[in-house]
Amino acid sequence: MSKTLLKALNTENGGRFNLSRGSSFTEHEITFMKEDLVSEDTYVLAVCGTQSDSEICIGTALSDHSCVIYSLTDDTLDKYETLTHNSASIVGIKFSPTSRNIIYTATADGYIRMFDLRTKGKLGLEIKDDVKGAKPKPIASFDISCDERLLAGGTELINGDAFILFWDIRYSKSKKQNKNNLLGGYWESHTDDITSLSFNCSKRDVLASGSTDGLINIFDLTQSCEDSALIHSLNTESSVDRLGWLNTKSLWCTTHTFSLQFWNSDGATPYANFDRSQLAALQNDGDLKNTAADNCCPVRVHTNTHRHPMLLLGSNSSKGENLKCLGVSGDNFNVCYNLLGNKQIVRDSFFHEKSGCLITGGEAGILNVWKPMDLNDFHNGTLDELHLKASSTRNHAKQHRSKPY
Image (cartoon, rainbow, N blue to C red; front, top):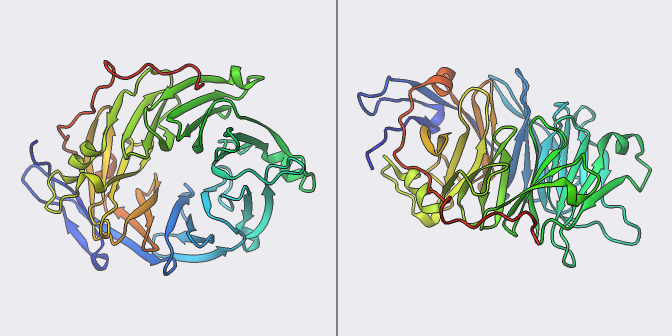
């Protein structure tokens, strides 16, 4: 494999780094913006944010069950609210898709809570499975539809069943005292914990679910029953960790074996599949500090409207120093940035499209904000193509199952 030149984001004292490692690059200037210790002796488990143009709100979920909310502008990164209502591990945190002042959290004890940041983080709504005489089902994942009409929660395996539960948020808001606000659920399509849920980015009634049973299921929620709603079932032949939509018809997923897959929603096999050793080769290309394959970890794929999707690729060894952003183009990767000076194993990230800011959080309890000086470099810059293509699975992968049972 030929050496690939890397662009760099430098975190040392807010310093700047000139991107000239060889004659094939035009020199670019990139800077690290801000860093803050969210909390000592706690992990940042999840990060979310708003896509507002001026002041960006950032939410962080911590391992001590609290959430710290930040305000990010060109000049400042400020804490302005801490939410302490949760009493169990946080499995997800998301801002409302329609309001920058509303944030949701989901916890493993079965509760999804809504907070209004205009009222100093007051609890506005508490949602749970309200079956009489039963404890709330332990939640492992959740998501909100693009119009904030539906909320879905995926559960752990309970007595042989794994549930996707649905609530109408508008109904719940207007009937706060009504204990029977659960719309219903599915429980026949997965056979293990439902680890990830993702509503389609523009089709509000299309939901993708991922599970440790290895399946990605895609549902049309307009159908009258679960059997009819299950329109596609994709077999990853692994255990799904995270998933998301690349566009209206294709998805990405990471697995618990640290592989990365890209799927068309109606595909029999992934159109691109990178195992951990291949990702480690991408991560190490042109880098003196090599990451062992067993330490390579895909963090998250970020989609944006300006260029191809972007993969954040990290390491779970030492302080996670080898942290890279790679542009995804079909079954190839393009080098975007090498994030120099990272001080922690990164658990999650958020990408703000307009500003080009990448926000990361991880096991040292630190929130980092990274931003290129010249946004055109990210959107339109010359990016060298890596000569590593996805392993083809079309000839030897098992056919996907139309039913998961």
